[in-house]
Amino acid sequence: MASKPKRLALILLLPSLACADAGLPVIMVSFPLMTMALVPVILLESWVIAKILGLCVIQSLKGAAVSNVLSTLVGLPLSWGLLLLIQFSTTGGRCGPGFKTIPDAIQTILTEAAWNCPTEVEHHVRWLLGGTLVLGFLAAFVVSVIFEKWVYRKWWPTLPTGNLWKASILSNALSYTGLIAFVVWILDIYANGTHSTHRIANW
Image (spheres, rainbow, N blue to C red):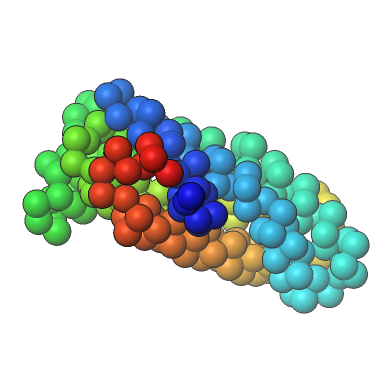
């Protein structure tokens, strides 16, 4: 019987296995991750917002909830769409050179930032998916900061703009740092707990 962390890793990485022949739109993994993390992210960001803006818990919780739900539904697809547009307009949809060397690995992650090419080498899934998820989260971070600051301005129009920027930047920095750490942890479990797709199927 598989442990809960291994089951979680399998569930989150199922899209990458199911799309082995067609490639993987990275949003198929990042969106479920963001959705799953939504409640703890809202709680964390509401605390940061309350501290920086001097708001009561209820006010900051409402603002964090609205901004994060909208950011997840709008900001994440938008940032992924921008990466996809850049990927296909600059590379024509070609795949990266692989992971034989560090420069090749970096080029592959940048080349396949929004849509991972199929790979037959299982351990490459960790590096390719992990790298492109982190890259996608960095892009989403920028979009989220701008988008959520705009929501804050609508929610609290009388508060200083500088404080709104500070709250948006710091709260999102903490949230995305946690998401990236979570991705690293899940992919490490996947790498250490599987050596073949047959073993995955037996979990």
